[in-house]
Length: 155
Image (cartoon, rainbow, N blue to C red; front, top):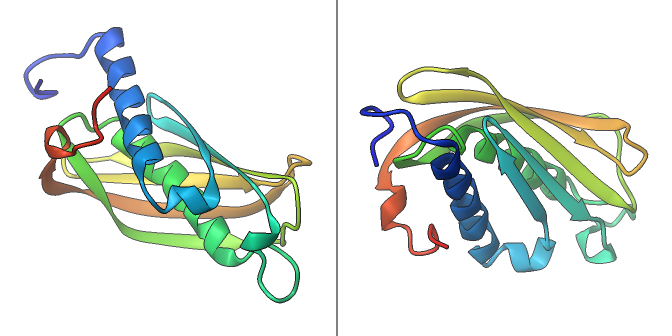
């Protein structure tokens, strides 16, 4: 299915989002984080419950968790618009404004610009009180690997 040759139907797009979610859940690193991912066109949300195993020695979630949520949300918002290739994070600038100790962390990502081979997406990170605790802005580029070659990109 080539996005260059035809416009995809709503059903084909929805199937693509579900396949991306399936691939995400199959990732071994997500066993540690137990995230929830929701994808729609140009948008993705990642939710992670903060647990003690995520803490650094100051008793709050380590920044790697913030980075992961921001990267995943912005990455999947971008890959929701790419139907043939896997995207790669080429950079992600993160800005963390306050720590999170408990509750649910949510990152909402959206595509803000795209060219033929590059996507720019941003994500806002929220605590369980819906206060912004961080932001990420990233660039994502098309890889050589086709989505159809990914074992878990299927239903």
